[in-house]
Amino acid sequence: MTKDMWIRTARRAGAALFSIAAVAALASCGTPGPKKTDMSNTTVVTVSQEERIRKRIIQRILELDDSKDTEALKQFASGPELTVRTSQLAVAKATDSIDQTADIPDGVQQIMIPTEANWPRSIFSITTTTENQQSGRLLVFSQDSARQNYKLWGLVRLFSGVQLPTFRQQTPATKSSAEINDPNHTGTADQGGLVMTPADAVRQYADILQNGSSSKYAKSFENDSLRTELAKLTATIDDGVKRNGGTQQQTFTYKDGAIRVLMTAQASRLKGAKLGTLVIAQIDSSWTRTAGEDRTSLPISDAEKALFGDQEGKQTIVANYTNVVALYIPYANSGSNTKVECVGAERVPVSVEAR
Figure 1 (spheres, rainbow, N blue to C red):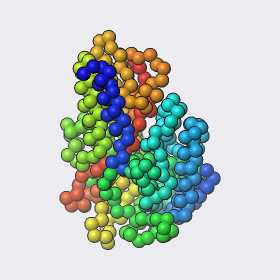
Figure 2 (cartoon, rainbow, N blue to C red; figure 1 turned 30 degrees about the vertical axis):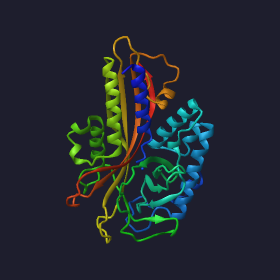
Figure 3 (cartoon, rainbow, N blue to C red; figure 1 turned 60 degrees about the horizontal axis):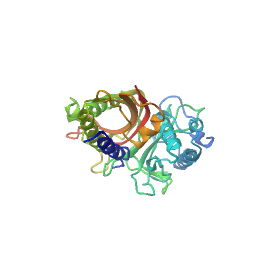
Figure 4 (cartoon, helix red, strand yellow; figure 1 turned 135 degrees about the vertical axis):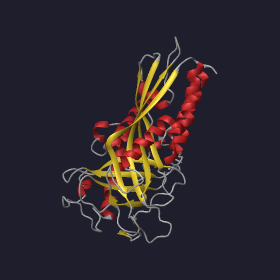
């Protein structure tokens, strides 16, 4: 296979991975609550408030697709989503087109609102499918303090066919908190009572992304679309690089503190309820590809090429990615159901540099 052939093959594989879908004054209406954790059945915002917060933020973010104003984006996005969307706008500015995977529907299938009134507060919403039938998005809106507005903190595209935990559901249709099961609660990175803490789950999953089936943690996790597609892409690139006498290596690291946790009730009246915790977290990765002697390493996707810009190619290229993952972690008393499962993800390059 020639260098041009494997680069084209790699770009097609990369595009497939990037399209994984197999899944503000008004924003400040998150009303100030008591400083201590409130374990009552009262949610931190009403369903109507969630709808206004969500639609306003999404509208403002999508409006920036035209202006590509990354400074204005900071008013409406934070956390990993600010990093992801900033990169998507940079690519759009270079290509004069926003990728269709960046679409965010403003309609929802399900809303999960916790009862705790401490900070930061988060609202979890699952959107409808996009106009071109991409899978729904899991959105996390976060408010850091009473003096700050809600912002879109995280977004993952849900994998096709996944079953999410059984949360108490709020829907715009009912305008109320239907008693599906007991209230949802906000968890922490070191939350106990699970088969592993949320932070440990993210660190172990990062190790699996880096080492694949050879990871010592692989047996503790279900297989998923991100792992499968990433393994395929890595194998394609590895084959092409080695044919030309080069090397490639990826490292994955959990970004400490970039995590949000939502817990179901520990018991449910519903038969077959899937109980545990939904974790959304950021994993940063770096992909170093070095060509053989007297050869040049090039970007492997349109997004990488846009971020690479007019740099002069060198023997080594380093592409940094932000990966946002949604993990389901069962409770420790869940019987035979003890495996952690990735139910959705977002993966975008955020910088590409020749070295």
